[in-house]
Image 1 (cartoon, rainbow, N blue to C red):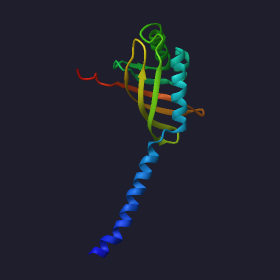
Image 2: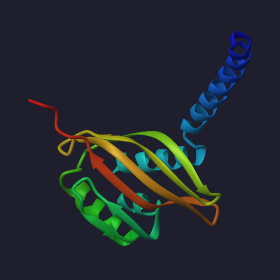
Image 3: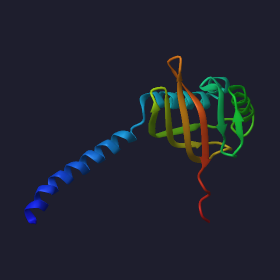
Length: 152
């Protein structure tokens, strides 16, 4: 019995190592997702609603931190025009991309964390579906969820 256990131990150790290696590799953000996150951050921090909207597909959907559903690139641009004139004026954004999961060669799900500063200073999570159109990755669906308030 001990001989059998001894032979199985290296096999199981190798399987655990392999599993952990695959899991760790899957956690790395995809370079395309990182580039899109960098472009979004730069546009937000400049207050450039037109550049932000250009990162969305024409028929994109967006659920903002307030739960409001926005449909279409033009509606996304308007939300940011209004936001940068009001509550988002002077705000900055930080994105921390997390896991990226390919669905097909032209579709990925990416998740991560966000934080804004300024009047509308909030933190939370995002889950985005990005699609490749004409060689460029665009946001097809964005869902943002605010972190719960800290306990008092």
